[in-house]
Image 1 (tube, one colour):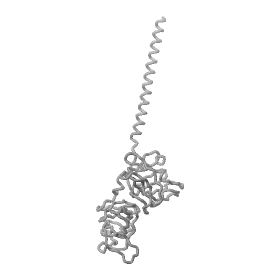
Image 2 (cartoon, rainbow, N blue to C red; image 1 turned 180 degrees about the vertical axis):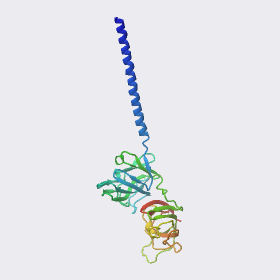
Image 3 (cartoon, one colour; image 1 turned 180 degrees about the horizontal axis):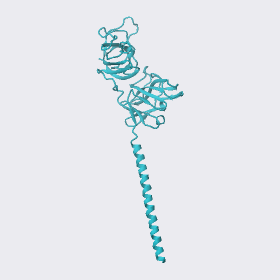
Image 4 (spheres, rainbow, N blue to C red; image 1 turned 30 degrees about the vertical axis):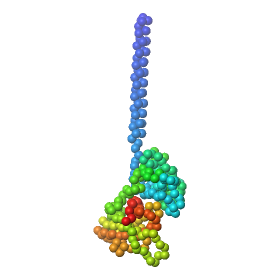
Length: 317
């Protein structure tokens, strides 16, 4: 064969190699593009699982329930105050150890508080809280307490973001936005349905009003006495266990606008006496509280079936 033939054959072979190489590179490029696109899609669709106040979030070792949120402007003794232009927000939590080992717990390592703009706020060192969220928890045991942060006045915290190392790298949050102003479940003057293992009933927070009544047997004077008016209806509570429904002061936690927990005051409204009611029965009751501040509201948290609902802001009239 002539040299010309071999020369043409070499050219064809080289061209064929280039074509195959080009196609191979294109396939590799397509696979890489597909992989990147798939990864980006997975990242983009990794939206957080959102919970609300009262829901229980299950992590690898813990179950966490956010019971409620409240704002205050100082501690109970009016000594510890935020910086000018700031206020304190307290987030009431319950943490349960669901692992088989005793765990060291620090709320600051479990979640962070984030506002609408994505800014996070660190825990404020403070001792005037209800309970403690630091320490050791044995298996099946729980701790309860409040997580305390300082934020600019009027800034609405949006959510708690859990550390993803505790969630199998799944984004989980509890939505807090607006919960400091309005309860997620109970609304003033509207019946709230309570379902328990012993049956169902409704509770209605009706209002708060000043009273001129005083207990002459008490030496301690109070600035104001305020009645919390409420009512309840027994749908089918106690049917299986033969028990009537009775909701007294143990069913509520009440604070003033400064966050001070209010104590009951020993006077009664004779027209609204709390009593036991059987299935189908209703009751309108009142509880008197001593208020030693200029508070314009009662902040009422209802405790039903060991779960807290609220707080709901009740104007004093």
